[in-house]
Image (cartoon, rainbow, N blue to C red; front, top):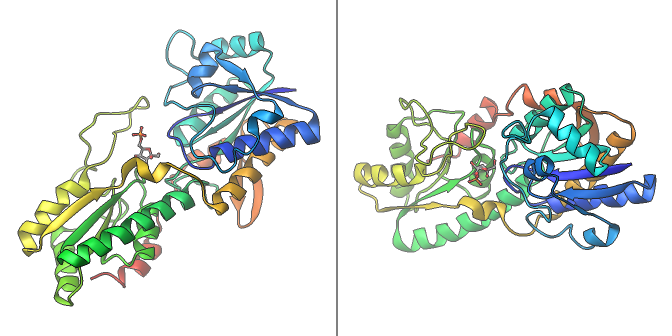
Length: 342
Ligand code: F6P
């Protein structure tokens, strides 16, 4: 079998480890051959591919980004999009099956295409850790580690100046990165999309920490919605799937905190730093195992499924299981962290 691999949506540390795991297992266990699609669904629609022999994946498990390139191209848009045209392109290229590595948008597209008869299996990825039906997505551990290292640095400068520091992390509509990075770095307040919080409460936590002689640290998720606001802060339009581009809430909160508490406050948006660089060992192992398992899904012709982590085991679940629900931070996890605020 000749298998095409694509990486789509925001990049994520560990993508290359998935590609390597898939190619090595496919060649060694099944005698499959592989091609890579350049830049996600764009490469599929335009038939833009390159061969992926074994030497192409040599040593890439530790590399950040993706050797295939990625994009947020929608597979249903444009004159080359849609199931019939994509199938025709795959037939022309002699590609028998596709491994799609992506987040919610990518897997939703893959599901629609498999419903129309295309031979696709999925591998979940996202630093946001928001995909249901898998305990963790690779990339999350790395993003979290990067956020903690950055926040530790913000703390030392904050303490020197007796300032309140606001660190904004990614995560889209869920607060996993904020919760974990905030807990790991000892934040005095963690603000997540799942829990609307009043400005008075935030000022209260900041004052409490300051009154104890601490430099208050607020970790806010980009999708946080302050109590009374209609939606998360977004000033950069929407992406190709129509979702608002988030980011900037930290800069909104900082002047309000300063004005209301009298404590000098600075905001830092960690942004795409969280997606860059080498994956952690945990993410490399998880990504490698998922790539290997995706090839087994192809060999078993389990189209419309994705591989996922349950405890320590890799399982296979229908794509729709990942799409039915966003995996949000449960109330009890936030309540546990909240005990430590202020
Ligand atoms: O989904 C991953 C993610 O990094 C989100 O946390 C963030 O909101 C978004 O992608 C940023 O997208 P882009 O790279 O297109 O700016």
